[in-house]
Image (cartoon, rainbow, N blue to C red; front, side, top):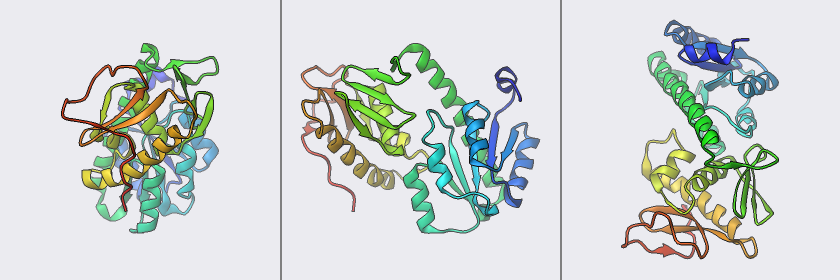
Length: 274
């Protein structure tokens, strides 16, 4: 097994789960560019590779018939996971939508061509490396304080990303993969405005159409706000500032970064996209 020190000297590592003819062709091209390829065929080996920091991005090759899309949801339940990318033979709209709801970073099709696919995989590998480094710096800087059980907490809130559980005033709230990404972003910027763009990037990094991403974002935020509101005597709420974004606000405490004066908070959730 390659040490972390040796990994830092390399461009990055792509973990391929269920390698087939198409992904083998792509990994050959990536390897020629200096990227390391790690191929596994089982969920157990995939989890082991991610936990041991042996992957900067994950490619699930559905073309081989060895793995199913459900594996993406399993991998996203890990405490930390790199970008997860799906490779498919054909455009199956239902499967693409299901993958985006799970929260995969990108959905690739063999018909896109090797050059385009390699370019996008390189982008995700580099993003994964950067995210891992940023997570390490945040951990060291104490942006989210580790609690005794390894979870991250702030007054009245405790987030256990591994279990996708948020404790609000000691009341457990179960989170979806997308809600987890949103909560992490909001907690890291508690009492400060988090823009729509920042939340869309956290939840749907692979979607470049902002209007579409915003339509996807709204129902997730609406459900998350209702979960906060369901906790009796909660000291935190998610306030919406029209045309700007959301703030994880501690009730009765002034905002550390007030929004523009023209913005007014909305008491209720925005309507869900139809």
